[in-house]
Image 1 (spheres, rainbow, N blue to C red):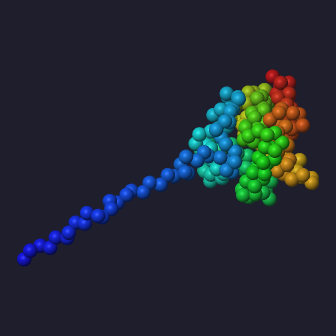
Image 2: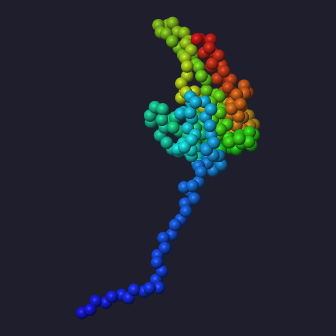
Length: 216
């Protein structure tokens, strides 16, 4: 019995490997699809490691769902815009409302861009650098004799305190006011970035440093 061999057809086309160019891989990471992280500069060399706004810290949205409280100093690697979002979720009734805080920050960045014509992320970074107190006073002593002693503030605490002051100033300004919290936060960030004394954060920072100076 002879084996049957299939005839080879010469006119069959060779299979062509299809190549798809992935545009996403070449896409630059932009916050909310608008604001680039590429040209952000941290002018204060001490705070470079604690203001996360470059490289792998660049995100499309300030909502990474990272576990930043699990270990000490881990929140330093949280994107700086997300840290602002988290600091807005304060005062009980706002706890956990991260999408609301996201919307507030998105509107804030739009307003900052309209008013300053700059990259709003850069304005926020400048505001944080200007708002962190460099000196504070602590309680020293025991057995009923307590006095205040001036101490230097670490760069990490400077960033933490700046974010706290900026969000607190915006919250207090918008309370019982016709202006929305986004407008108040935009005003606070712009004034803080300029170093203006109209900013709640700058006023508090100057007060803290003045008290510390008197306790040296």
